[in-house]
Length: 404
Image (cartoon, rainbow, N blue to C red):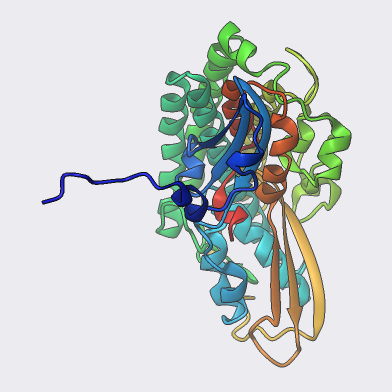
């Protein structure tokens, strides 16, 4: 048996994954480093080609293409209602929010917007905001691990699991729900669901406050994130950033307010923005802070939805969540684009219908994480190599919707 398991060959470097930079074009003090994966949401599907000068980052080139699940082509071969399970797999940490955005688009094509019972609308917002909290908990917890803090991750994942169990009780699935249907819902809330959520709310509030005390005021965390990865507002707008990344740069732009869809106009909540409390506006600390504050605002929305769902929109024997679900979805010929506020930013669906089929002629997804990944080279140039990890984590990327 040959004891030699691997023999270096120079051409393997170029053949394995083509690089923008070649070894021959580097300066004597520069290196090409393949960085990643270092974040739970980039598990083997994002490689960063980093050009470094010692500890300084000269340039970063993101390499994609390891996860491609062909969502848009799948959607062009499936009936509209059968696309929902595939939507779940885009941002798999926020499936309820993604379903909501997609369903809003198809309902607009079917002229169902504003015609659904209020109980359906409040249930949709309730589950979407619970999923927003769960998504942010993953972002904040794993970001702490990126910096070196392990305890917040354990606290936040513990409470996220409570939310996951509630949504599993609701839909039968832990993360990929297929719950929000075109024209309604898969099923009404289980009996006792509102009470269980109400019991969870104070626990979530306590955990968020503990994380704020432990992380945001921690001198090590502040040194690792304040004045690091500063994203000016003009750059955020030019790169098409949205969600906490955009709001972290100081612009209070939230589609729940701007587009005023579903019952969000009836609900009271604030739009947190970065203020440069520990450094400069738009730095890593601000982006993380915005997500923590958004969790608090989502809890406010959840409480208001619960009040409606046990009050004016309480369950009745006559309520049928599938009453308006079309048996056959065949919209008129049109092009449409509908967007919604996902935990990571603007998720939009462009749909083209030919008026003859129950299968879309064209489907295109506007994925927020794709835009946020594109701004990474701008943020990373001139930063320390160790800070590159902090910058990536602050963008809260999910490769399911980047490499869709």
